[in-house]
Image (cartoon, rainbow, N blue to C red; front, side, top):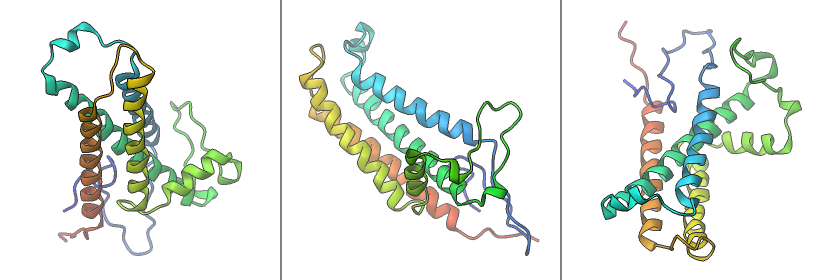
Length: 195
């Protein structure tokens, strides 16, 4: 039995009968993209706030490291899932693209209408789950972990560069990569039909 999180936060579907198309989930796309953008905003806020609130200084020394690891793990997980969703949507023929939900302000663009950045996102999204796409997302955030500490040390006077923060960021990235690879392996396991 596969994990409900194996498909990137979307519960696993029942196996399709012969000749039956498996429907693509549509309701969660806005939530997945919202989670990705919010995780990035949270990360940027945690890393680049000019002066830390005084309440944070009362936290244990390792509390800061947990926050660093968490925001990087969350961002890698969310962006890997969002890019995977973009790749799945780009792979659908335009005639099969879902219409936006009635309560959704979003618009579903046909592949020919996408801008250059959308094409790049869709190409990254088409990379295999748990493979090159995941490693690319992890590499981007690993570079950001290094750059963020340099920015904190040189450009933010109330902050300082801390190698242990960078290590905590990388541990968070490694945790997200491990979880994503586990989810990808779980999704590839065959679904046993009890009937």
